[in-house]
Amino acid sequence: MAKVIGLRQQRVQFFYDTLFKSRGDVTVTNVPATDLAAAETIMFTTNPTALDRTNMPASGFLTSDQTFLCYAVRHELQFYQGHSAIAQEPFDDTAAVFILALNSYVFRFQVSEKVEFEGPWSMTPAGGGPWGFVSDSLQPLLTNGEPQARSIYVLPLPIAITKRQGIQMLERCFNLTGTVVNPGIDVPTMINTYSGLRLGRTYIDGYNTRDVL
Image (spheres, rainbow, N blue to C red):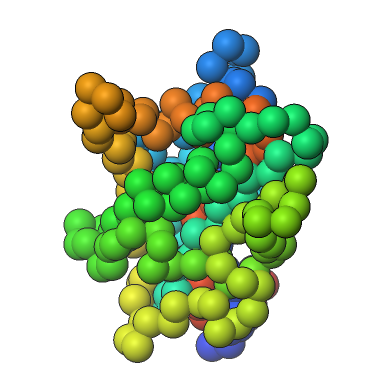
């Protein structure tokens, strides 16, 4: 389809990719590696086969002559225990899994060869989706950020992505060190063996400019 010369469309649109999404102890089942938490994962590099995983139009870059101004990097993190069985810390304790996962993940946002923005997940809340509390609930639900616009950390200066530039988001999960008495925790394994539901997503949020076809 031919494009309209001299006319461009600007829209507010975030792009996302899924880090993990699964249920139960997935270390004992044959599940795709893309559904598992890992020590290191590079996001926005898989083919956009389904909207449940990503809406990036191509593997690692925007198609055609699209450009993007990124005003926020967001991370969605959810754990949900759908029954009232007695939790066995740390692998079945929703609060412990959530807190350890949130405190263990860091990211590095890279455009072409340059690192543009990096830091811990706790500084980049999702700003949307369900949220909850644990203290008086038999079915606790926690997510990274209250579902309001004020929960999004907006960058004072946008990150500009020009035509055909490579886009990568490195997600790295560090283990919790310990002692002989209180041993450390392999955090990716903790996430993958959690008995409830789990979901982790990465977002870049801002203004997308594209051709009019």
